[in-house]
Every structure is written in structure tokens, then in C-alpha cells.
Length: 350
Image (cartoon, rainbow, N blue to C red; front, side, top):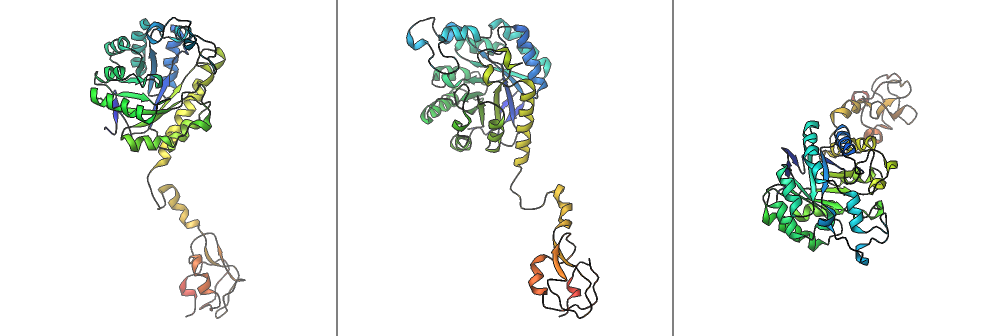
């Protein structure tokens, strides 16, 4: 497996920083103008890419009233699947101008494809990668169709079992050469932080040998930042212009200022990981001189005995290391020592 994938010339994987994706989803609220503002907001907030979702209601579900087509519980309780997706869809005629706008903003754009016709549309627009949503990870023919384009395939694990993840990764690897990335995901909307099990991220990386990130539906920004500390190299988070504007995804989306703060915090977290080191770094090296050492804390006459009243461990660090204090106590001063003088072995009588 590839340790990194490439999206428009940018490597995504261990050692290449954090790749931040702004998910628009349904937060355009059916307005093309709002969709364009979201692309601009994503670029201004520091996202590396904007992600769409490419489907029609009749390609993702059926216009059907049977009970299994109605959502029970959660954020979308009572919605028919068809009605929810009709509300949330990004019209196909918007895709070309949005891709063009993303290029103008200097930001990548790709999408979650939900059927072969979506792959065909996205391929015609030069999509640099394909996302497979967590509910589609069991659709191996769709995964193979995306991988056959030669572009990277990014799989959200969501509600998949380990065996289903194995099948999906194998399908993508078998069908294409663009590489695979996995996004650890909890498909709750919103997802409780205590159910995120972020320790799964390094396990996925070790198990599959591919880049692993996080598709996050929790509230706030703490979970994405924590995931970076555990090795996440891609963060996907929903972006809205304003939660109070409503929409199917608003409750677990970030506003632009929040998204920017998250992106900056994730990159700071990545930078802070560094490497294993037990040596002072440049910013701390100068402070070595402020460490504790042994000083005369009272005037000491030549021949006077060193004791706890005239020698102590204090800051700064120009004297002998404090570990030598037991060796010095009880011995005698070789010369007169003024208070505030750092002790050296020259001051100690053999």
C-alpha cells in the first residue's frame, strides 16, 4: 500500500503535514450564491480542499413510503430518505462553476460520489480524488469505479466492520493505482466525543499501511486536534456560513472563524509532534544557564566548614550541579568566598 496519496500535487500522508477538508454538504441551503461563498470561506479559513456530495435523490434512494425509507431517531427523525436527499443535494449544474471557482481560489475540490453517473460527472471535471461516504463503503462496485479513474480514493469507515474495511481497501487497490486513504469516522450526527475511539487511528494506519485521517461530526474542534496527536493526516469537517441559518447539517458544522481556528490548531498540533528528542531544543537552550546550581548564600571564610547555612542549591546555573551538595557539605573552603558566588571545585579543600 502507498504511505501517501497525492491531491493536485500535494502529498497527503505521514510526514506531509495535515490536509484540511471543508465539507459543504447541504450547507448551501439550496442557494448557488451561498455555495460560492462557502468555497471562498473555506479558502479564507485555511482549508486545503472543499468537498461536495454528488448525487440525485433518485440515485441515492427511492421515492418510497415503506417504513425502512423513513429515518427514526436522531437529528433527522421522521424524514423520508428521498425528501432529505432532495433537500440536501448539490445540483449537478452547479458542479462545473464551483470547480472553476475553487481553482480560482487556489483550493482543491473533490466530492463524494454515490453512483456511477456521479463518477462520470466528476471525472469529466477533473476531480483530483474521490471520497466514499461511510454508508457507501459496502458498495464495492462503486469503489472500484472510482479507483478505475486512477485517482486516490478516500474511504470513510463510519459504520463499517474491520472486515468490510478490508474488502473496501482491497477493492480500491485492485481497481486503481491512485492509492487509498482511510478516514476514521463515527456516523452519528452529531457524534458524541466519548464515542470517537480515536485510538483507532494509529491502529488503522498500522493495519493497512495507508494514510489515515478523521471525518468528524462532533461538536467543536477538540476532537480533530486530538486526532492529529494520534497520527491523523487528514481532517474533514463540515463548514457553514452560520449555524443559526439552519439546514440538515448545521448542528454539527463549524462557522468560518471556528473552522479557521481548528485548521490552525490542527497544524500547530502536527508541528508540536516533532520527533523523539531528549536534548534541549534551540528555544530552550539559552535557559540551561538558569537551572539550579550550588552557590554561597553567606560569606564564607577560608577554612570555614561548608554547611546548609552557607551553601544551597539555587538558580541560576553557574555553579556546581546540585547533585554534588552531599559531597561538599562538611568539607572546608579553600579560600574566602563572597555571598552570591557560584561554587566550583577550586573552592573546596581536598
